[in-house]
Image 1 (spheres, rainbow, N blue to C red):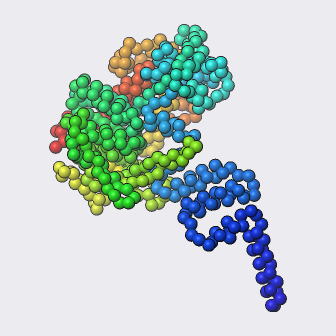
Image 2: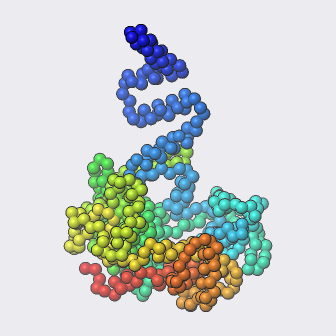
Image 3: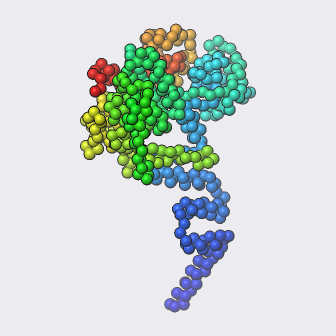
Length: 528
């Protein structure tokens, strides 16, 4: 028995000895347990050892990206890893501009077909028109090659002031034309506005980009010159953006010294941001529209105006994001967006929803608002009396999960109906409208934007029949019973392609329950 034990001990000893001594980093391994190192040093050593000692060749960049992504996924739902492939698009959207020729297009029959020529872009300046086909770019043939839209965009974009030669087929006149277009900065607007009614301005803010503050002030100033003394600020479906821009826009409505937002760092330090003097709209009724996709910076603005008794919030409970992120470059074009602080509205409430059950449950909660009945009735809102706060004028507001509106807009749709309406308002109809316009653009030659908005569509029956066929061809089942909404959508996309976003909004809003509710409120007594 002793001999067997001794034999086993020798085998174990030899195994350990061979395991430690084979290789080039014996000293590193022997010393690994002799002293304490930080977690970051441990991770660095791990990567270095794999890089120099792993038996097979391995893509270290891919491994590191995976480690970072997995690590970030263990944090809150809003801390994310952004690979370089996504960074350019995000950067352009948040900077409010890109460098290119300034067109939007569909790939139609494997050909680049111009849908819109963007305002203040290079293509507009040289006379390119909607409906034009871009056939060749710098002797590179684009048609008939099964190219993706992403690859076309890459070809059309480039460095500022570089000239691109385009060969275009103009279907309207059956001409082949040549254009030399100098690439330039093309704005990506985030703010649109028009007069909703006499004396009432409407502004849609779709994100808080770097240029949004400037765009907002210009749009608001124009509306005031047109006689706007009341304002509707639409933050529906606005996912947020830069915090400093949210502060800037909130400041436009608040008098000097009013609290805009309170932020708290991971060290527990609190800082309050205060309004300055000379805001563009410190007086006059304000209504802020929100829904369940209004998040982050949108909630900062809505919370600031609600808590300071400066606006009525109209709509449905907002997303519920009360965390602040900082974007940190990692090198090689990658970045992480890391939560570095919490924020609180001026009354001191946090509107961050709980995320203890994981990211999937956190994001699923938005869809489950239909199941709980919250979309249909205000009575189903999850209000926590222990998170009750009071504004300076005595209004009760709540924390714990989004901004709860002062004036609720209930939904009457089930999920199937909502899906139908989503499709009816989607880019599919935008594509259908392009095809219809492309058949005969002279038929849709409206004298002005006002002419299109005021006139009913003349060929309703044919359009409805063609759209139903189009949906069938796309394999998208849609209930076509709501003819009024469908025709409104068709007309709005005509306005977008023939005129601009403001014309699109004016038509859409004629069948918008949030706008209808706001118009009712505008007739009532102002907010005390």
